[in-house]
Image (cartoon, rainbow, N blue to C red; front, side):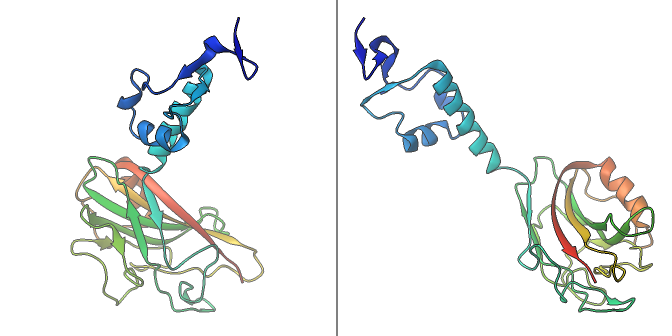
Length: 225
């Protein structure tokens, strides 16, 4: 048996030829070319190696297409810009700027929620609920959900939060209660409208949102006093 670099020569392949089915996998060819798999030099191409490369290519392609939510206003911690103005807090109460991408096929509208699961109520605290956002929209500017400010697209409706009024109500955790999590979620829905109005409670809106959810994406930030 002839050996090359310690490997049986029979296990080497001149990988100039693209394996059958490889070209049908999105992103596989590009990944392989960048990795040098199709170089004219001789490489050991055991089946396990090829499978691993295929799975990596598929994973990279899938990752680039996931439903994603981002914000240019919030990172890991809330700032005074997002914090509530009231209940002992003195923030600006501006809803964060949001943008999302790669909504699933069949999306007919979006909804956005912001929820604090750490509030000492036994059921958390709903800080923001907005629904019937048109499917053509993929971003909201800073303050779009703040009561009295413009920025929501035509047709969008804000429901009641646990502050008792419609519109964004920022973080204001109890003093000394530690870090609270604030989960902002965009929901892709399979209906153009939920048939609800501004008097709808957050739990009722949430029930309907989840009943029509195709996908959702979230970001989390923290706040304490």
